[in-house]
Length: 306
Image 1: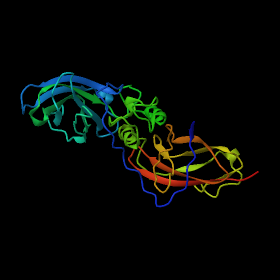
Image 2 (image 1 turned 90 degrees about the vertical axis):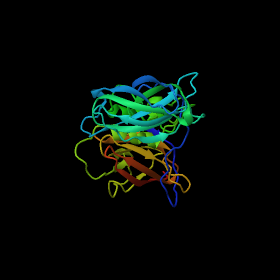
Image 3 (image 1 turned 45 degrees about the vertical axis):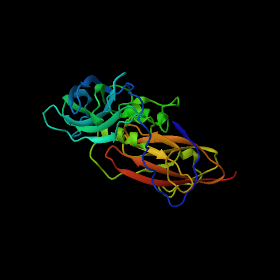
Image 4 (image 1 turned 180 degrees about the horizontal axis):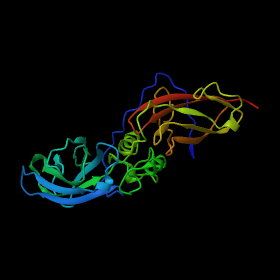
């Protein structure tokens, strides 16, 4: 069960942008699939480094699984690495999505790419501005927070405690930092949902939400119409697409969803506790499903004086 901070009503809401922080050092998180070394020994040379992708790490039922590639120079190396391409086990180039380029400050470069079959990925690395030297290639499985080698519902449920943490805080988990930038936000949650097995056929994303029945003063007018209670602390509960993650919060005219993250179980059920002042508290709730769907709901709760 999760407990969230009290939110505030807002006007002219706008969904927050993804975090844009610096990459962290080339640490080895628990969702690492493989790590190999290579060297660019001459200017303009492209080094080819194979890293094996085990079949067990591919998400069953999806046409591809997203992986992350981090390249950083080894100690003493003068290489400023650049990922120039990736060749799949079938010998064909795989389109890569750049995450962050190498800079002296972040010390590494990151990219991610969809993989459809197991076997060796050949990562092609060159040096910026004719730099040379040795490097490491780190391949990770975004969304695999628990380090089991595949993404499942337990990874969804492990995400909320780390949400909004950064590399300098105690709740930060490197394996939850899917984009390897030192901060855990909604962008990292999207990687979990992208690599999670699909819960059946895609349906419209719906959100049923209400107070626990024994805490509700009057019968609600609908499944999303809000709640009325005498209590200062309530349990909000509901159901949505199984495996989804929910994000909560209003803040001063800008919809940030930074209050808390809530996980669902394999049946789509969720609940969290909330402290209430007297009067109306309006929660904003962003739901992201394994199908990539998004839904925003406003759920008002009225605390009635006793």
